[in-house]
Length: 263
Image (cartoon, rainbow, N blue to C red):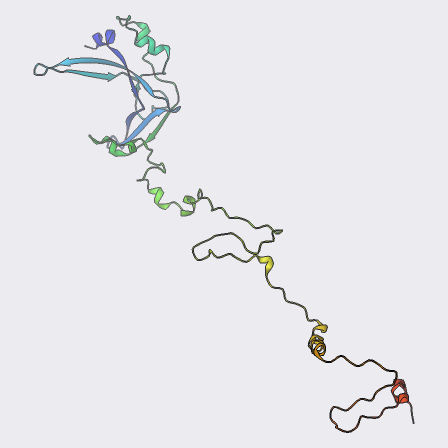
C-alpha cells in the first residue's frame, strides 16, 4: 500500500500551521498548541495522496496523509514526532515532486528529516479539540491581549487602555497676540469666547491729584475770575454777613517767625 504511493503519489500539503497536544498529568490533561513558521510563511508538508471509489458510488474519493519524522529540539517537549516540512521553492520540493522519480531511493529518503528552521509554538483554546469547531480564535495565543477569554484582560488598568488616545487639538494663544478673546472650544457650555488673561483689570493706585478734579471741573463752569489789580481786595467771611474784614498790607506780609517773638 505505502510502497505504491511513495513511488508515484507524492504531494505537498500547504498549511498555515498545525496543532499538537501536550500531555500532562500522565495523559489526563491535554493542552493544544499551534505551531507555525516564525517568519510568517506558509508551511509545506511532505505528503502522499490516493484515490478510491466505493462500489455503491460513482464518485472518486481523494485522500492524503502527512509524513512525520523525529521531532526537532524545539518541539521535543510537545511531542516526539513532527511533520516533514520543506522550505518554499527549495530543491527538496522539486525532488519530492519530480514525476520522473518512480522508484523510492536514497535521495527521496534523505528528505524525510526534521525541520531546523525557526518555529513559533504557543498554547491555544481547548475548543479546537472539539469536532466540528472552526474559528479564527483558535490561532490566537491563550495569554494574548487579543484573546477575549484571557482573564488578565479583566484586570488591566483603564489607564493603559487610554494611553493611545490622542488629545484634541487646542489653539494656543501667544503672549504677543492682541486679540481680546481666544478661539478655544471645550464643550457645549463653554463655546462662548474666553477672555485672555492679559486683559484682566488692573487696580489703579491712589492719586492725590484725583481729589482735586471735581473742584477743577466745578470751577471751569463758573464765571472767569476778574483780572488781578495792583490793589489788594479784602475777603468776605463765609460765616458773617458783615463787611469784609480789613487787612493791612503789613500784617499779611509778615514772616511766620514774627508770631513767636516775645512781646
